[in-house]
Each structure stands twice: as structure tokens, then as C-alpha cells.
Image 1 (cartoon, rainbow over the protein chains, first blue to last red):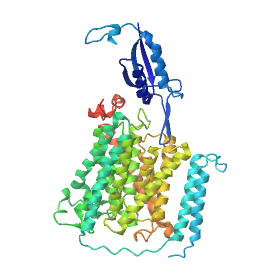
Image 2 (spheres, rainbow over the protein chains, first blue to last red; image 1 turned 90 degrees about the vertical axis):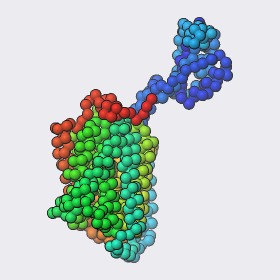
Image 3 (cartoon, helix red, strand yellow; image 1 turned 90 degrees about the horizontal axis):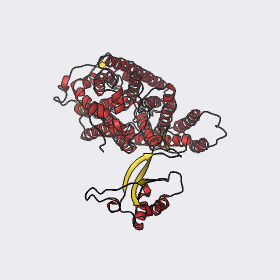
Image 4 (cartoon, one colour; image 1 turned 120 degrees about the vertical axis):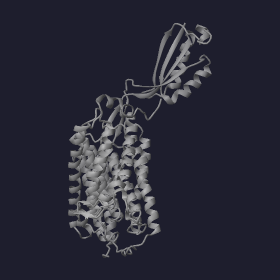
Length: 114
Length: 472
């Protein structure tokens, strides 16, 4: 079986996390998207000509990785360590069970497709 | 001129520094109980008072400028053509970028196109009928005589205005008429129909700008009264500010009234280009390349820099941080306020004008606008109107006869100048406000002023122009 790991991280942490994951060697690919959102601390304030606006949605990066079950704990740990600054807004990691993966070019499935 | 008690200036400068320190303390026991805007007013009042004292004791005498020769002067002509090009730069990249960066992403192009369209329209109408009506021979102090349709016979006869060709003078003035109209657009962006805007620009420039330019500069009644407006405090800025306010009132509020600049970086470039072009606007208004242009040049830069610093300081007092938008708002307020005074005041006057501009405009956008709840999108009234009024008034206070023999203000012993300035402000502002309401109403009942609600939500770039400023 596989796990689908979604990590919401600080944009500037992306390279560090990628390096750490590649070094560990379990991860063969990943998808990255620029997203915006908020967590418990909400967004931040901006002030224009004296008026204050609360910007709810903060810029984040969404990292998506599919890994084999036995590697998932290690991958999560690597992401958690590399993404951590200790301040609010470091992000979250979501882990989903994944049924299958199919490589479009060759129709390979499962482990071979990752 | 006077016996200069040197110690007095020093004492006042030191006390000023002390006053600034006291006012900027976070927990100031003296002023904690006062409303914050009163603190700004008190500090500014004290600053201006000190400058008046320093000025009136520290004045020296300067020789009068040599009388200008009536022949064409190549240096003057070259400078005026450069100035004309500089003022052009203020509208099309300058104002377009300044305004363009301040609006939401979905209306950035529409905002810029309002400036661009106004520039082109006035460029054409000015030489068909505008120049004649503003600067033609005076008819009853109200309007110029319309004798040269299509600029006929002015270029052909090698006519001169002062020491420069009339064609160059007319082109220079054309750029003023254009930017005045473009300035108004800042009040109405994100909700006015583009077709209505262009029609408004045509009618307004004819019915409001041309007479007012004639009153103040073209030999009309305010000029005869001795109203001082070196480069357009009343003609350009009070005029645009009040027109903006009137039009914003007619249009009503936007659905989303927040000022959320989508790209402040281009606004900073725009403000920089405005500042750069303003050297042509103000120093060019000397119409020669001599001492007076030099004075106007340094006054422009000094007042603007002072106003920028002042707005940053006000941001700091209020919110304990400086902001980029605050800095460039201060710069524009300073540029506006020094405009009528540029060729009349000395550096002391320029500094006072810079400080006053930012304080008053800051109060207007932070307190006046929320209090009256009008939606002046980019604060054209708050910045151009208010600082224009301050500049016109300050010209009456600080005009120094040794800079320009044509102006003597209150602190140089001519209190009546303030009265004349107030009259000019009221006449220009009042006429402009009422006429703009009438023109706006007429357009509203015929082709309509405002876009459809769904177009406003979608953003004007896509709905009116089928374009967008930013692709994927």
C-alpha cells in the first residue's frame, strides 16, 4: 500500500525540504503548487494610507508526494524537521491512504509507477 | 536686510527638534489626553510658527532679476521644450503607473487608460480651441477670445510669448491641461464607464479648465486681482481635487471600497516619474532658464523631500512603522503644495509647505474621508485638493519678494495676499465643484456614469476593454 502525503509549508523552506527528501532517497517525485490559506493564527495585517486590512490568506506552498507505506514515517519526519522554524505558520502535513498509482506512458501500476 | 539676531534662529531650530522629540515619544504625558489629530495640528502649527519667526528675521536682500529681453532666446526655448516633454512624462507613464499600481489587479489597465486617453484627447482639443480660450485676449476677465481655431496664424507668424515661441508655450500649457483631467480619474476608478469618462474629459476641460486657466494665468479676473499661482496650485490641483470629489459623490461608493494596491512597486516608479517630471512642471513655469527656474527647481525638490519625510514620520507616530505608500503619498502631497509657490518662496517657505502638505493630506485621508464616508478611490481630493489648497494659501503667506518681485506674502509684510489667495481658492474650488456636479449629472441622465454591477465585480479590464493586465 501507499501513502499520499500533502505538506503545507513556508515558501522559502521548499528547497531545503526538497534537498532533505532527495538525500534520503525514498522519494522519486513530487508536485508543488503555490497556494494561499490560513491556519489557527489567521493571516496578517496590511496598512494602506492609515486603513488597516486583515489579509486572511497567507502564501504557502503545497507539496504532494506519493510514497510506499514503509517509507512514509521517515518522509514525514524529514519534512517536519526541514520545515520547522518554531514560529506559528510553519504549516501542516496531511497523510492519506492511497489505493494505486498508474504511469500514463507505460500503464505500470503500484510500486513501479511511483 | 534686517539686523539678523543669529542666536534666535538657532534657538528656534533647537526648540523645534525638542518639540519633534516630545511629540514622537510613545507615551507622552503632555499630549496623551489629546486626540491624535490635534497633536499633528499642534506640532505643525509650532513648526510653521518657528519658520515664520526664523524667516522674518533671517531674510537677506537679493538683486532683482534683469528684465527679460523681448527677443527669442534659444536657451529659454530649449529649456521649455525639455520642460514640456517632462510634464508629458508625468501623465502617461507617471500618473498612469502611480494610479495603476494602487488599484486592484482587475482594473489596472482601465485605470491607466483613463490617464492615457485624457492625455491624447486634450492634446488634440487644446490646439483646436483650448489654447485660444485659455490664453487668447481677455474677454471680460472670464474667458479668452476665440480667434485662432486650429491654432491658425500662431505658428505661421512666428509669434513669441516672452522669449519663447508661442507654439512652445502653448505645448507646455497643453501638458498642464492634460494632466489636470487625468488627475481626476483617481477619484472615480473601478466604477466609471470609460465612454462616459472620455465624454466627461472633453466637456470638463472645456467648461471648467479653460475658464479657470484664463482667470489665473491668461489675463482673467483673478490674475488682475494679483492671485499668485506659479505652476498650477489652483488651476491644476484644487481644480482636479474638487472635480474628483464632486464626481465621486455623484458616482457613489464602489462595492469594495478598500484601497488594496495590487503592485505598489509600479506606484513607486510612477511617483518617481511624477517627481522627475515635476521639475519641468514647476521650474518650466518660470518660462525662462534663469534664476527663477533655479529657485523653483530646488523648492520643488526640497518641499517634496520634506513632505515625504513628514508623512513617514506621521505613519510612525500613528502606527509605529513607515510605509512605502505613505512615503509616496507624502511626496505627491509635497509636489502638489509647492506647485503654486515654487517660484515665489525661499527654502524656508518650501520646508514649511512640505510639512504642512503631508500633515493636512494625512489628516484628510485618515480622518476626513472616513468621517464623511465619500469614496474618493485614490484620494485625489485628500492629496491634490487639500495640498493644493494649502499650497495656494501658503504662497500668500511665504511669498518672498527677493525670489520673485511679483509676489510678497504675509510674513514679508503683505497680509492682503492671503485674502486674495483665499478668494482664488474659493472661486476656483466653488466654480469647479458646482460645474462638475452639473456636467456629471448631465452625463449620468444621458449615457450613464457608472458601469453595471456585474462589470464592477468582474473588474473593468475584462468587462470594458476585454483585456487584462496580467496573464496567467
